[in-house]
Image 1 (tube, helix red, strand yellow):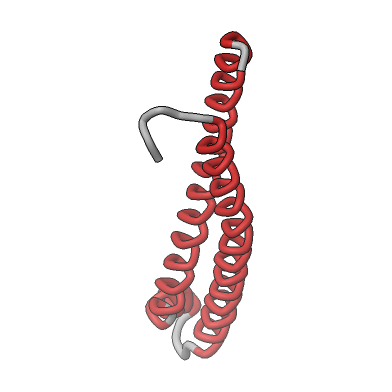
Image 2: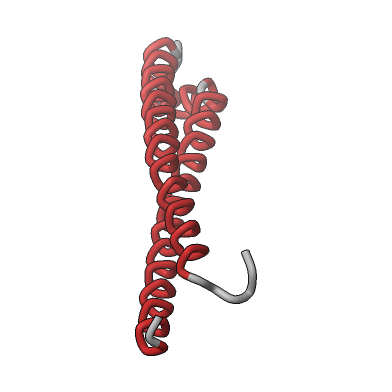
Length: 115
């Protein structure tokens, strides 16, 4: 895109941003689904490890924590991926609002110039 903005360039940028937002909805949904599945897998693994530990009651929680470290890491990674996708989606919405503002300014400029 050139340094001089014209309505066609701005409309193309708005369309591109809108397309990226629409794609972001799918990405966020997939990331959240992955987080929920990882969270459920962690909860179930923790419960199994807690119940399977043969030792005093005071050790059960810590033994389950140690036994489910990989499930917890997977859950945390899925959470990070979802939050990143969500932040990206919010950034795209801000970008769209900025393009809409620029578009309004350019339209006003053209209206004043009589084009």
